[in-house]
Length: 289
Image (cartoon, rainbow, N blue to C red; front, side, top):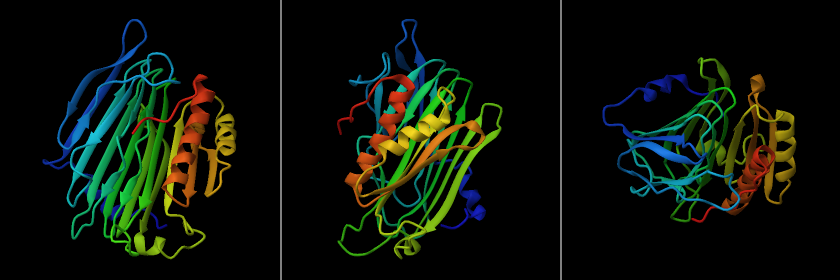
């Protein structure tokens, strides 16, 4: 992996044709969380709030879906999720997102998460699937307030629909975690080219065709306990993974390499469910998709 190319920072500029989805959660007087405000434009579609067995009381699950069949050249997608004070919510996708082949412009995807005081928010979409010649600039910014918890996942798969050995062009990724004051707590940033990943280098990804990250941003439990729970949960076949403390006592995180999509799905779920149980005492179940 190469250092992030700061020359690409211009891609972050707001474009007049950017497509937005803006969702805000709030807690009602009896303790249940609801969608207080939403503004969702094509290709986004937001399903109705559902309840799921094993979730904490009052937590809804929402599916944020795409009607476009994936991400295409020149797409500029912006998503903002705000969890109000003491609210709790789980946001996921209905399926993986295909990142299609591109000739000139990359696809741009921005996610902003704001967790207010005492909020508990989980953002766990299915993986992005990088097709040959895909170019993706993906940036996540998480802002946390005192007493809040954010569990956020990001994962990807490689696939050539023609059955060959085609690989994506490049992927830029940046995850920033900040306090409400703007103080930077964590920055995870990389850039990688498909041709480099295809070499199968042991110091990059080896022969793994799937990878993911799980960030658990919280002060509710000792970060060392979160690390221990994830490490135990990730002792799986076909998975090479590690968990560690986040800087500035921000929480813990795990990085996962897996041989295929099935192994990655199991690993991401295990790491999430281990941290959810530790934080809330509630053991989640797999969402229906």
